[in-house]
Length: 218
Image 1 (cartoon, rainbow, N blue to C red):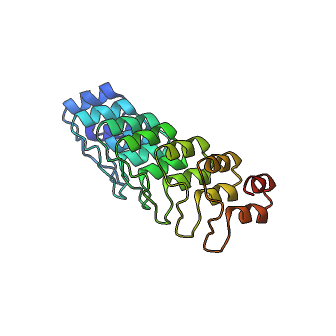
Image 2 (image 1 turned 45 degrees about the vertical axis):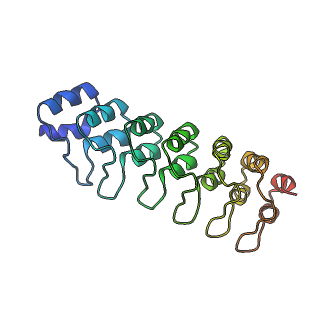
Image 3 (image 1 turned 120 degrees about the vertical axis):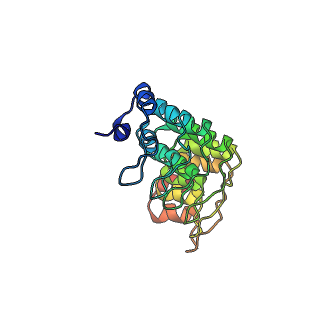
């Protein structure tokens, strides 16, 4: 196996340094356009990520589909690696292949501390995906009440509507996330907002038989 290809499978920072000192190709790619740096980020090998950046790897490099190291680390739940990438200067507004900002990826997964780090690095609090969902809406849809509270604390619009007119409260209601509903109500969610079908959050709860949540929304 050529020395530059070894890097794709190597997840030891010291050994990576040795190979690079032996003129291994830092920018060698596999058939998906992924370098050793991107693979290290995707697998959560923080020390290797730091080593490769110190040797010249571009922190915002992407594979052929457009996936960056930050997006790969976040999507795989490697929050330590994601935090390291931000410290190394990764773009906090990196996008997924389907157009979701990094902040939305973090919100969907309930990565509250990482989300705060993204915001500290100037991630767009009200950035949206292709359907008009913000990070707050995504957190509500997945029922991450702690993340909701963090986003509200940062100033997120609790009543923002997506392209279908749905609010965070509507998504939390439809998914049956009682604690998320309570967090949104405490943040001042408007009970009177209607989606494009003319439904309020209370209508959704009643229609779906979610009586406990419906009672909260009266």
